[in-house]
Amino acid sequence: MELKFFKKSIPTLIFLAIFSTIAIPVFYHLLKVDKKLKIYSPADVNPSLVDVSVKHITKDHTIADFSLINQNGEIITQNNYKNKIYIADFFFTRCTNICIAMAYNMNELQEYYKNDAEIMFLSHSVTPEMDSVPILKKYAIDKGVIDGKWNVTTGDKKHIYELARKSYFAVIEDGDGGEDDFIHTEQFILVDKERRIRGFYDGTDKNDMEKLKQDVVLLKAEYED
Image (cartoon, rainbow, N blue to C red; front, side):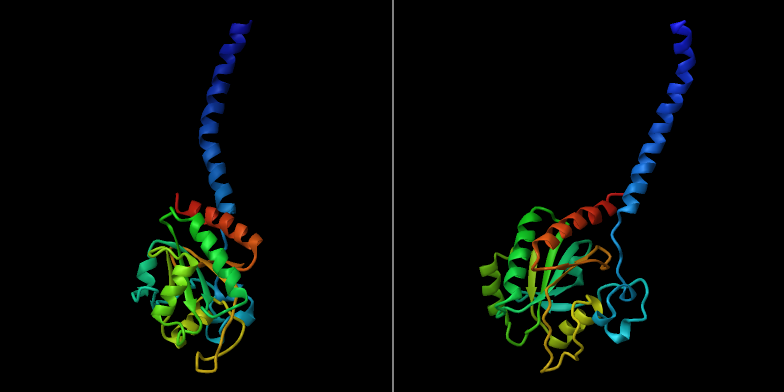
């Protein structure tokens, strides 16, 4: 009786085994898809953060090409971040309020991802006329910046401010990048390998830093398929 029952069960067991082999990976894939991070375009962001010239864009937004100068006097462009996930922010070396917490948290993130070649960091000075290469170098040493991992940069003010407003959506204030223009923001921006924005975080907030780490896990998973 038991042998007969076992023989009848064999096709069922084979079916369940085959079904599990197919269904479990499919279910896992669907689960991963559900957990994908949002891809931000201008239409998805608070309108007050978006320059009027790009508000109409509803998809395919990417960070514009850039050319900056880092703490070692090297030209840094988008090519230095090719096939990298990176975290960007805007700072200035003489800042005595939010930038202190931001620099601390960026350093903590750098340490956390020190051995992860996929992750890089990019800081843009909002007072480039004051933040010369020697000043950036001293700042980089003081903050524990790892060359090749984290670039703290200066450059043309109009270029940097246009990046902040039209590419990263990092600031609320309007402006033209002129002499009297000044931006100040605590935003950290997560950018994927296609130069798309995948998240915004308060760079002074520890909870947001933990959220950023969780989001990086999800983002990296997208590139494992």
